[in-house]
Image (cartoon, rainbow, N blue to C red; front, side, top):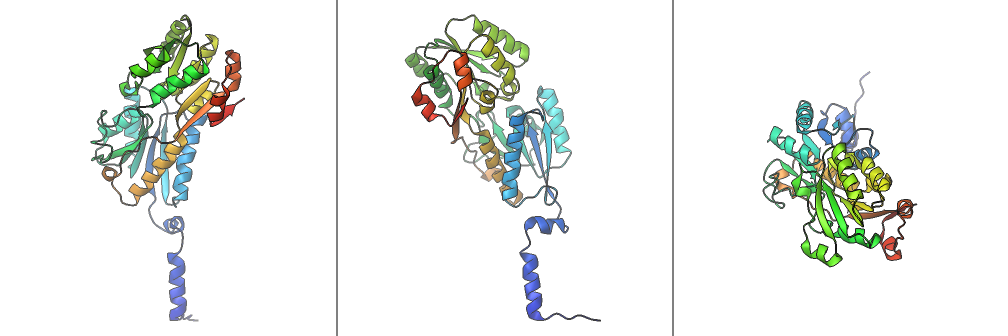
Length: 330
């Protein structure tokens, strides 16, 4: 028996197919696009999983469905330059359409490895000074992305540390020497106004952190500022434990440290940056060029205070500071 269909029914049927979601049409034969993600976190780190979830959820909001029209290949972990280079090479073997590089070392090695695949970075250094882009407004190459630091962050961290621990007179700023652009606390006016002496403390490995914290623990009225970097972030629990042992008030630039027991944190909302990065991935997959997407500087910051740690350090948190906090951990 032959079935015929009228012109009106045919138009209606074609309209239904055209209205199918992008993910469903992809399932019918469209090749899935591939995104490579270098995560400067161990896969077991809840902070890294939180960022990966924010990234995936934002892509799904924009019509990309994992296993249908999109595949995400993750490389997780922390290591030296040689390790990162080998992991980046492995990521490139998956022939991604676009790469998300979390952290300066990953951004640097990815840039050296490819000049054609679009790369979106989330990095802590100055992207122009580091050579990732020609300018913030017009990146010019195959890299663009988001910065974690901005010029006022260093003085703000120092100001907050003094507000919660007014007796502090000597402050060590912990940073990774492999990421010199991370050292952003050279505001002499701010340090003079607050009556503190600031010294740079470079660390890479747990042994460096142990030695630095032991030395700092011998100082009278000492405090600590921990700048954002994969090296300091991956060892944040050790830093938190040593700060508690030596009764050192410390402020971190990443919220995850305060969740793990640090006194306080103030810095960019990193899950939000990963959501924004997903927006750039979406735009590139739909045809835009990284050279035309400006590098975004942070605009959303969060202040988190751990009252339990403050009590253990014998500190009374000013009510005005508590009122400004985005989150208070008790």
